[in-house]
Amino acid sequence: MTLATDFEPVFKDFLINSATHDLAHDMSHIKRVVSTAKMLAKQEQADLWVIIPAAYLHDCFTYPKNHAERHLSSQLAADKALQFLISIDYPAHTYQAIYHAIAAHSFSADIVPTSLEAQIIQDADRLDSLGAIGIARCIQVSSSFEGQLYSDNDPFAEKRELDDHRYAIDHFFTKLFKLPKTMNTKAGQKEANKRVIFMRQYLNQLRQEIL
Image 1 (spheres, rainbow, N blue to C red):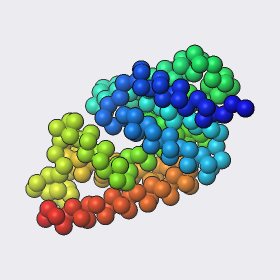
Image 2: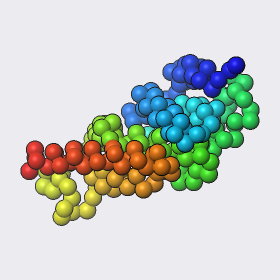
Image 3: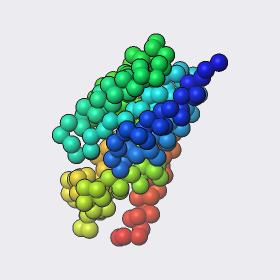
Image 4: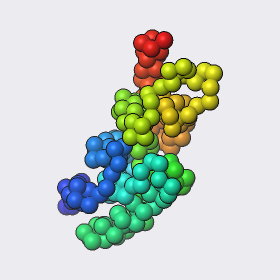
């Protein structure tokens, strides 16, 4: 009996050979999203025939974070993923659900996930912006923009406006700390809150070291 997991080596080969990723959406990110999506799917009893390909292929096309058409990335990824799934004869009854899950995962796309599977893929992707790995990714992306870790004069924006284009730490407040409230599933919200606690502990430690 064929299982959705049997296709994982094919998905990995496809990504290695054809996908183009920025620093924040490399293979390590994809592997983490797949792992998290499986965990959420188990808790929420979702369809792995949709979850597994959507998690692997959700970033098979991405524009850089600062690209003018960044908001179109997930829909272009969904188009590319569907063409690939057709080429490998993946079960056709899953196509629409996978397409929607990929298109709706992106924060910038602003597409409401209407299925449990799409909600899980969105949660799994957003969870990778939180916790220890979220801190590392935030700094990594900010560095690619030549941004600083924090403002020397006002590290935590207590007397200035937030500017996450210039300072990595500001992004915690402009976006990342708001993500738990956007989680679709109970399992996703629980994990998000746990990761945010760690991030706040990091900021407390940073405050002690720099002030």
